Amino acid sequence: MKVSQNQNYDSSFEQVLHKRSDLHILRKLWHIITGSICLFIFLRSANSQIFWAHAIMVIAIVGFATDYLRKKYRPLNSLILKIMGPLMRRSEREGTTGLPFYALGCSLALYFYDRDIAILAIMFLVFSDPISSFFGVLYGKDKLLPNKSLQGAVAGFFTCYLICLFYTMNTATIGTHILTFSIISGIIGSTSELISAFNVDDNLTIPVLSGLGMTLLNHFIPVFG
Image (cartoon, rainbow, N blue to C red; front, side):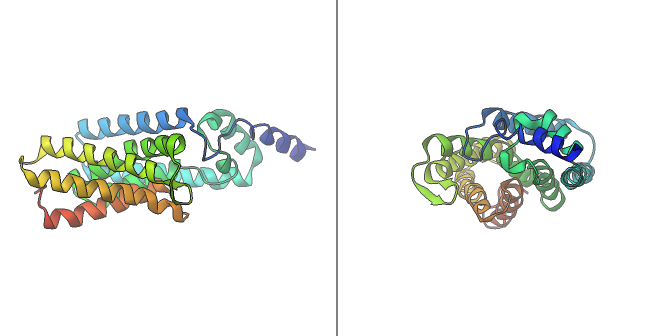
C-alpha cells in the first residue's frame, strides 16, 4: 500500500517536470545564477585552485550518491521532487540529474587546466549552455544532430566567442591574436556542446572539452602565459 501511494505521489510530478524540448526558463536562470555566484566566490577567494577543485568534486560525489539513493528509496525521491521539481526535467524524475555532472565538469576543469583556461571553460558552461538551449528551443528549425540545431549552435558560438574576447582583453596583451584565439575558442565551445547529443551530459563535455581545446590552442596562439 505504501509503495502504491509513493508511486501515485511521484507520478503527480509528471505534469510539473519539464521535457528537454521545453523552454524551461527557471532552470536556465538557476544554471546561470548559481554558476555566476560560484565563479564570483572562486575569483574572490584566497583559497587555491586545487582546493576548489577538491571542494566541488565533493559536491559532485554527494550529488551522484543522492541520485543513486533516491532511485532506491521512493520517499527520498518524493522529497527531492517536492523541493527541486520546478528545476528538474521529466527524464530526471528517476534518473541522474544534471547537478553532479555540472559539479564534476567544473571540478575537472579546475584540476587539469591553468587558471585562465579553467575560468573560461566554466564560463562557457555557465552561460553558453543555457543560451544555446534558449535559442535552440525558440528558433531551432535546422537540425544538426538529435536535440541540437544550427540556431542553437550559432548562439553558443557567439556566446563563447564574446566571453573569451572580453576576458582576454582584460587579462592578456591586446593584439590580433586575441581575436583569432576568441573565434577559434567560440567554435571549440559550441562544438563541445554539440557533442552532448551523443548521450553525454553537456555539463561535462563543455568545460572538459572546451578547456582541453583552449589549452592546445594556447600552444599555437599564445594568449595566456
